[in-house]
Length: 168
Image (cartoon, rainbow, N blue to C red; front, top):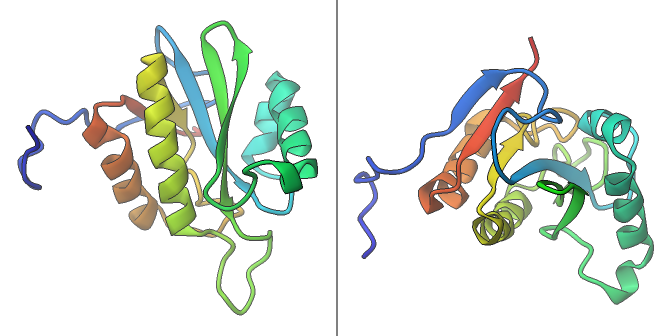
């Protein structure tokens, strides 16, 4: 039975901690989520921390982009890459290009929402918690005040535990 908006007292709240999102503070299956661009670029921002820990997410992202004519790569697409027996990295294409231009910053909120909706399905299947920096707010140019409600709606309201990491 669904409950009307405003009656979500039983929803799992978003949790904020100081720390490194590539080192999730949780037991059990975990997904580390981050936003990527649609140009196939990987080299600035949070992805550097991901690549310092694991090679597979970058390699998979670059292959996914290179083969894009034959797969689902594009804005709104999400792909999970397993990096340990109980940890995955979610490469989420939520950014158009890499520079702010006439259409504003590269973040595309509707694409981020599609990514997080798909991520929720994956996390529920894996019974995983989700861990992320303040996605879409660095190089993507987005604002947390617009991203946070999307995270809450797509993940928390579906009972997926989410931890957001802020560096000290």
